[in-house]
Image 1: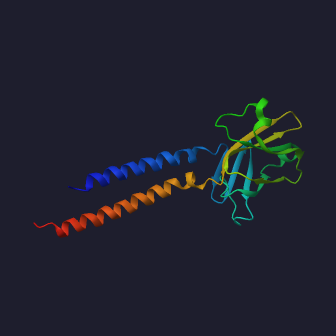
Image 2: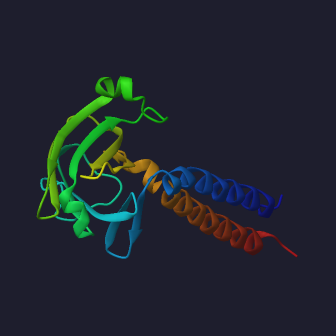
Length: 193
């Protein structure tokens, strides 16, 4: 019995699974864009720079998903000076899988920073996540001339497996390929011609 069809079928399955599992992570970051070392959040016609930190877990910043639960610091820096005249509020809500209903916003709010003008262009907010889960950050800017810009970005806390699943599946495919290759060589050596 040849192991090649089994290898091809399992490899195809693992590649499809890596694509399917990786797809939600690729589309799930709302207005957040990652460019080289910067995390950029699109809000209205302007941009903000975003950084997240978990001092107890690591000194590295994150853009999309916080690696563990615990103390988390969010920092938003305005890219354009006009935003410094606007009030900004920041809210973290549980991700319900759909657009937030304004009437039920209070029920799903995990943390809230009330509206305030940040004349230096930096908003900093700290929250202690006690449970792992999926959340949405919502930043709202209200301008002196009636502008209202809202940006939302989904993120996970303490949920690294879904983010790393494609890598695990590709590693499993590589291990399977190596196993089949070694098994195939062993069959060639022991099979008389």
